[in-house]
Length: 246
Image (cartoon, rainbow, N blue to C red; front, side, top):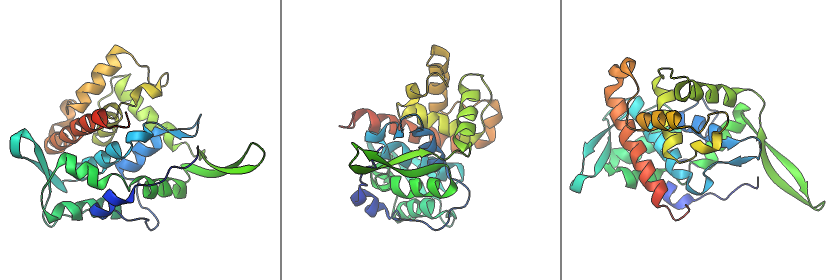
């Protein structure tokens, strides 16, 4: 796949860094981008509206860590605000938290501001971890074309198996897996995972439940995180649906 240009302007407003130091534990947006990467074709599913689910993953991660909360806004809208004096340690998450610390933002506004510059830094992290590999191929015997390939370390397969267990086997999800499955569903890319995750009525039903924050009885302790994540995912659904790229 030929690498796509980034969209710096909106991300610059959110303060998302153009690069990162050696990454620590993967954040949710990294896991989402890795799953959206399709090893067979070297493409990323949902590329045209990618920044919405990636930004949704950043906000959901902040919600899972109790770094942000949601509040009612005007005319039935929802705002997301930073939890004071509780910044996340990861630099990409911290950049989004700093943006929200300035003042509460509508979820759609936050998605549009945070998302567009995320792809490059997140992809760099995946390459550094060995999850994805950048390579060159000769096109038409004349030109070197930059492509993405599977890194071969098995992490994508493990993530996919976790999501499959929840959507197909009915396993009760851990909060991060629930959020990941909900974001895949909300982004409209879940059909791309057939047959690994069969596109069936039970799978669709369970995915929609996760979008709404129905994570199962064991997730009662994550009530705030579930509410925040469900709100964010539903805004991702709206944003991805009305995007001109669709």
